[in-house]
Image 1: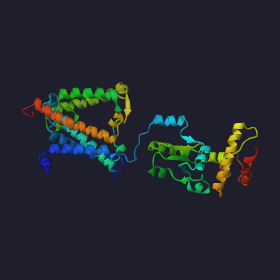
Image 2: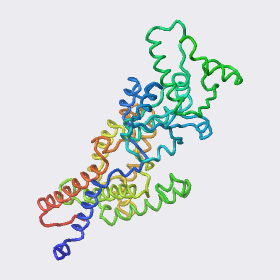
Image 3: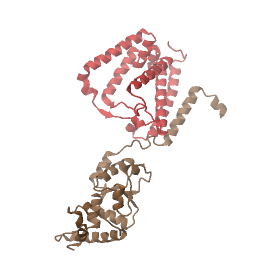
Image 4: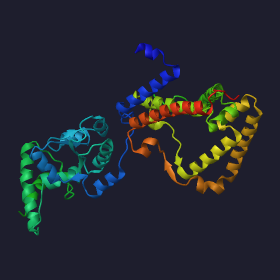
Length: 209
Length: 200
């Protein structure tokens, strides 16, 4: 073997080296190291149009209740996170989220206060190749309005009343799992009221039931 | 340390011109050493008697490609920052044809005519004069041909984009193509120039 190799001309040895480096390139994987990604714009547009990019607060609440394998990511700052966060949520900055090298198929739900920040992170994670990532529609505001403090009007349709009953059950559950629940009602945005009326506000959702 | 150095601010615009000058001199030197200062040698490839242009150019492509791939893989080069001229398909096909016709007629391409002129070859000087005239005419006519010049834009378009293949696989296929090309070139040379006589 050695004798055979030494009988090769310089050109043949260089050709062999190029062939070897080419073959190794085949198995080496992408050289980009997360610096650049290719995104399927049509697929993203389809996901957004068909509303497969987000889930409702009800859906997330059910997943958490049923202990479905889902990671909930809170993209707000740590002070807001400590004040209140959705049970099981992890506080994470967008940069840290992108640096994570977890499975790209794992179910992820992103939320921020309103939803813009989460939608931006959703786009980045989709570009990174995550397939099972969602934003919480309406963000934490919607979670508070729909799950923590559900309300129904007196003129609600039967369907709305069924939904309300379900939300009420969810609300009770989430108040139990987070007994230290301290929600700043100003974030609920149901009715802009001065902070002194927070407690009264909390009791109101049960009205009309 | 990360490349491209200029993009990462390792040196400024003035220094980059100096770097370009040294690279240009190096490029010219190796073209001359490969024998590309002779129009006869360059034209010989069209008659399959001496395919060194094909071989040298393909070696350069494969070397640069493998270098770019592996340096990116090692994290020393940010490939996304490497300048890739934008593709304008139809005007560039047309430009390629003009280039090819000029190459066959004059015996030089833009780089090699500079090498020939620098080594004192009169045909190289004439070719260089023709090239500079062409640049001037192109510049003057640009406003008339701008529409065509910028038609069919495809942006940064590379082989992996065209073939929709992973980068590594494309690299491997190009290497295979080059190796097969070198073997075929040697055979063609033996067939069309069995004596191995090199035109000077």
